[in-house]
Amino acid sequence: MTTSLYIDKETKQKATQKAKKDQLSFSAVVRILLSDYASGKIVIGSHMANSYEVSTIPVDKEIQSKMDSIVTKWHNKK
Image (tube, rainbow, N blue to C red):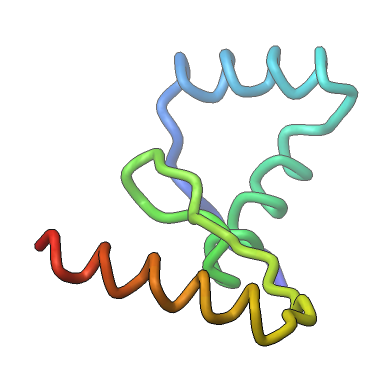
């Protein structure tokens, strides 16, 4: 499937030059950007979407008690 997009001459020229420096084609840049936008990796407004990596860390009772105490103190400061 082919889709046509209007991109002003100056923007296309700058993007094409940057893509060449990065050893990519202009169409590859467009495909990557659209794919990342569709999957939520890019937010319109020139912001990179935050991504977090979550992992579980085993904690013993003593450390958990200390963490709970810190959280309680933090909540009471608000």
